[in-house]
Image (tube, rainbow, N blue to C red; front, side, top):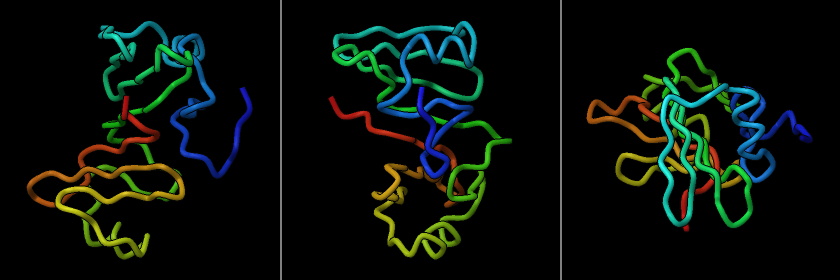
Amino acid sequence: MAANRHAAMYRGLEPEISTLNDTILILGKPASKIINSKFTICKYQFVEVAVRKRTGKVSAIIIYDPTFKDVNGFMLNDPYGKISRDLNVPGTGNTIHDKNKKILYIFNQDTNLEKIVYGDLSP
């Protein structure tokens, strides 16, 4: 597994690079799995990893780990305004999309960061 230090990674897992085997090796056995026609989704305490069945690669990592600082330096509960200003990206509704690094920031009703999504969940 090749690592890019500027890539959006969670504990060494990188979308479109890492596999289901990498996920289990790094994070251990998932608490549960959801399997559908497009994805195998491994659920852990603070993260969900979606592995695309067609490629066998991690498609997206949904992070709600309160101790995690992402590649842009953001953590859960950071305010919408800070992230929008630091990235110089206007948000849409309750999300801000860093298209360069393929990161989606999702905010709660109090406009604080609730989830970080690395990668892509489109089918």
